[in-house]
Structures are given as structure tokens and as C-alpha cells.
Image (tube, rainbow, N blue to C red):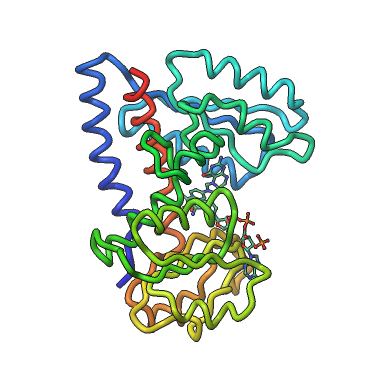
Amino acid sequence: MIIDGKQAAVDLRKALAIEVAQLKKDKNITPGLTVVLVGEDPASQIYVRNKVKQTREVGMISSEIKLPIDTTQAQLLEQLEQLNNDNSVHGILVQLPLPKHIDESVIIAAIAPHKDVDGFHALNSGRLLNGEKGALVPCTPQGCIILAKKHLGEDLSGLHAVVIGRSNIVGKPVALLLLQEHCTVTITHSRTKNLAEICRQADILIAAVGRPNFVKASWVKKGATVIDVGINRIEDENGKAKLVGDVDFTAVEKICGAITPVPGGVGPMTIACLLKNTVEAARANA
Ligand SMILES: NC(=O)C1=CN([C@@H]2O[C@H](COP(=O)(O)OP(=O)(O)OC[C@H]3O[C@@H](n4cnc5c(N)ncnc54)[C@H](OP(=O)(O)O)[C@@H]3O)[C@@H](O)[C@H]2O)C=CC1
Ligand SMILES: Nc1nc(=O)c2c([nH]1)NC[C@@H]1CN(c3ccc(C(=O)N[C@@H](CCC(=O)O)C(=O)O)cc3)C=[N+]21
């Protein structure tokens, strides 16, 4: 089974469009998302363009702020302060990575936690860690859980989930969500010994590494659910750029029970969950 992330994202956006209309009717609020982009990274620009289009499609207000690559940290902080104080902005996303001269942790800490739709602020990650209510939960990890449940159903309890990667954006928060779902969770990374052997024990295997064809068919247990988070740009046989994940899709597809493709898997769900977080942020602060 190939898990259709594009369709799942369409379904989620449909549900969100209804919520947005309701918010407008009941409270006269239109959820607003502002994306801040520093510099001209072409991949980021595609991502931003997709976000803007989909935000408008569900009836939300979308704006983007493009700042030059030589923007100083102080200037970016000033911009964030303005957005924090703007009542029409319910969600703020600062596209990562930032240029080297800007300290990401300082920037993330400066976003008002109730507008932090990425869920990267320490208050939100702390709430997630503690299992407290009201956390804005990182989008890609949310998407991973929704897609895993498309194949496994609502109850993931007791399943062994193996996560490859321990970043703050994907690996760590997805491991916490899986724990919340009562999975037995193993987090692996570049220092892990016997990675293949550990992966073979996984009922749910989440790959968030950033290396094409990293996960081999021999690492996957028969029938496992494989969630491929990786977004890698490579050149095909004809020298044309294409997107692939972290999993050797063609080989793994034959062994696993279900797998998310790239493109069309976790990526579209990430954006849909970003819109979901923005609706939640707007409702919570109405
Ligand atoms: N689909 C989507 O919506 C999104 C996709 N992505 C994609 O997901 C991938 C991961 O992103 P992100 O978490 O930000 O990346 P990072 O580079 O921050 O993290 C990569 C992780 O992989 C681990 N790793 C690297 N090499 C190995 C190895 N040989 N064996 C085991 N583990 C290894 C690293 O370990 P260590 O910590 O030891 O260095 C690290 O924890 C990227 O391709 C990114 O583009 C990211 C965000 C959203
Ligand atoms: N503050 C911040 N938050 C993020 O969530 C964040 C970030 N910075 N920096 C970059 C990474 C990467 N990321 C992607 C999201 C969706 C797709 C996506 O929609 N991918 C489509 C492909 C789109 C295409 O073909 O161009 C797909 O996989 O089908 C890709 C990548 C979010 N990230």
C-alpha cells in the first residue's frame, strides 16, 4: 500500500475550510499566517509559494515577508516584534535554515509562543514533552502520525517505532508523539551502532535523515509501515532535477506493508498541518 499524503492533505484542508468559515461567521476572525523568508534559497521559495496558495484556498489570510540575505539579527527581531503585536497575524513561521550570521535559537525564542505555528519555541516543545494541553505541535511530526494511522488505524499502542534522526524539527518531536500514542520508541542517529538490525525490529519506521536511498530493503521488516520524511533533490539519468526521500522506495515497497512516497507523502501533510496549527492559534486567541 502506498499512503497518499496528497489526498490526506486535501481531506484535511477541506475540514479546515469549514472551520475557517465557522470562525468567520461566529467570531468574525479570519486566521492569518505570515511566513518570513530571509534570502533567496530556491527550494524555500517553492515551499513558500505552495504554502501561500494553499493558505488562501482554505480561506485564510496569507502573507509573506521576504528579507534580503544580509538582514541582521536585530532587524529580524524587530520584524518579529511587529508581527507578535499584529492582531491580524495568528501564525508566524520563519523559514529555516537561516543565514549563518543569525542565531536560530534566538529567533525561535523571539516568536510569541501562541503564534509559533511551527511548534519550535521552548514553551511549545516543553508542553509536548510534558504532555500538557495547548501545545502547538510541530507540523511534520503531526503529518507522520496521521499518515501512519491511515494504514494502521487509530490505535498504535505497543507497536515498536524506530525513528532515524534526532533533529528538533522532526526526529525528537515525532518520537514524543509516538510515545504519546503508546508506542515503544527507539531514536537512532549517526552514532547508532547496528542501525540496520534496530530498523528491522520496527513496526513503524520513520526516516528523517536527509540522504537519498539511505534505508535499504534489508533493513525493513515484512509488513512494516514506512514513513519517509526525507526531501532530497537529486539528478535523474537525464540530468534532470527530481525529489526523492531517504528510503530506497522501489526495493522497500515490495517488503513493507505501507510506505509514504516522495513527493506526495509527508511534504503535503506538513503544509496542511501548518494551516491546522494556524486555525488552532486563531481560535485559542480569539
Ligand atoms: N517532508 C517534510 O515536510 C520535511 C522534510 N524534511 C527533510 O527531512 C530530512 C531530515 O530533516 P532534519 O531532521 O531537519 O535534518 P537534520 O540534518 O537536522 O537531521 C538529520 C538527522 O539524521 C541523522 N543522521 C545523519 N546521518 C546518519 C547516519 N549515517 N545514520 C543515522 N543517522 C544519521 C543525524 O544524526 P546526528 O544528530 O547524529 O547528526 C540527524 O539526527 C531532510 O531530508 C529534510 O529535507 C525536513 C522537514 C520537513
Ligand atoms: N520553519 C520551518 N518549518 C518547516 O516546516 C520547514 C522549514 N522551516 N524549512 C524547510 C523544511 C522542509 N519542509 C517541507 C515542507 C513541505 C514540503 C512539500 O510540500 N513537499 C512536496 C513537494 C513539493 C515540490 O515538488 O516542490 C512533496 O513532498 O510532495 C517539502 C519540504 C518544511 N520545512
